[in-house]
Length: 287
Length: 86
Ligand SMILES: [Fe+2]
Image (tube, helix red, strand yellow):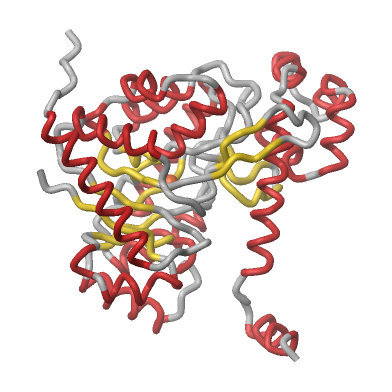
């Protein structure tokens, strides 16, 4: 199976990635970092995309919202997609602002019929403006979104089926939510329509403890630590059940180790995915 | 209910420490003051308090990080950024 594994493109990793291009099949560029790029920067990105397959990843569109997505931001994404011609672009199932207040990061919206309807409209608008459907990614949350009437897997699966978008399945995000809110990763995965899963994210995180309730802690998806074992276990399972090639990106946003450490982690992911592929237990078709 | 008001309220709740304090002291009253429906207000009385504290902290760290690493946008801001180094 032609799975491809690669790294998130971050300036401190650039020279390491370029030196070891034979070990990196694909890179994922944060689109928002280049919304204001100069012509020279765009030209550099184009050169990079000619050397190594590139995918673009958005972080601030706020697609999963009852409120309409900002067309100006979509225009900038469209311009970047046109300039770089990535293999695909992706964005999170998150809201990042509301009523004029910028949250500053990805927040989980209440999982309701209203946010499903809003998200579907936003995905339609995005597809029309950018010219291609985004892959949509499940997010990690420290708070169980208030006002939710649906479970996360059900909410995500409905959006996937009704939008017919593909999914960027972040395995650490679902693992973090599972330990934080007490559900089974396996059950979540089984609720998703596998034919929609086209790409995966791997990352790590750390525990954070509440000051007000010191007996309570949550797993924070900070992209600063190595990928934990349960995420590799899930990767193997995904390899078993998803019948088509996947693009797998290891995300690391800081606390950078030497590049060989990340390349080894990527190799571990490659081996794990292959193990899943070889055990070849495809999900039984539901009749 | 269309959901937009609830998201706007949540955005403020995650960002504004004073609102968070007033809200935690009396969730129902604060939600009603924001014009949320009775269903939404009732849902907010059940809010995940551990999650609210930790999420608000995490969002604050992200905003601070962005502020520190934001790249200067306009010519004037670029000049200011250079001057700040001296
Ligand atoms: Fe991710």
